[in-house]
Length: 377
Ligand code: V47
Image (spheres, rainbow, N blue to C red):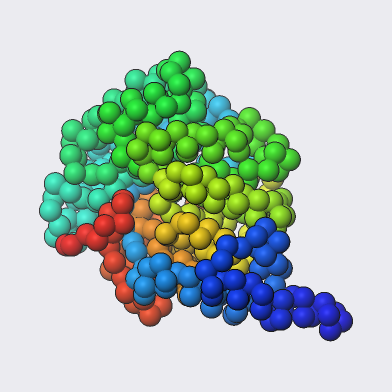
């Protein structure tokens, strides 16, 4: 590496970007690519941490939540997904509504024994996503929401990716907007950010040709925001994409957020390769930290950047709190999607473990609800 190349990748290349960040100016696509290309990970982390502190002080959020995946049967067989099965294939499953309620009640027993919380409110949030089931009618999902709300009136239901919503609108023969309103009427409170993957058409054709397009994902999210439903946003990285495609993805999210202000948090999802059709390798720790930091710097109109401990691992997500993240997600209870693809993290964490992780990173733990309001236990 010659001197000018070293400068390009090292400290001096970041000086202009540093000035922009410190004076609150918006980063361009070229700036963001440079940040990904830098070797100066410490300056990058410090800059991202500066922005995170401006937005959220020294706080780091977590939530007491549970993940439920009603079925892994899916008509789309995305090549990066190790969770989905075709109907009739070994390992395929589908839960009845009673089984879903039972799972929520089982979690309630575990938690109330250990933590002595109000037994009517085992978690503050249930996160529900699943495959696109070939036979379930739209009404099944409405019934699912309504029954959960009836059994647990205080729980917040964060459910269904944009991909599922678009599928439901085909099942119900309603517009996306009316489909969302119907779901909301039956108990849908917020939506997770899954299914975004990488918006670039070329990458999407390699990874998930049958899936809703990037444009489609963005327009479902826009409709959700118009319907008064807050959502998250994600980006799946570390498979076949390049930095430019990652940055373009972030730019598209930033542009939509400028218009709707409906995104609550952004989560970069580290690709896990085990048991998937495309295979490949795990992302490096440096790439994970860079991706968190660049997201924090580019998404200047997002209040929260989540370091999802399931995908980053407990130790790296703790470090990500010093690289621009302000949230590590939650207790989860039984994570299936990433663990099918070889996650090395545990499947669940207690609130005590999350608090401990945050404190040891020098941050102030704040238990939040689905809308980032502080929860007092
Ligand atoms: O939609 C699938 C991704 C997502 C793999 O909004 C994979 O708060 C890595 O969206 N390796 C589900 N990722 C997870 C998700 C999520 C998680 C936590 C919080 C929130 C939130 C959202 O996981 C899928 C897909 O994009 N995924 N397979 C894999 N092999």
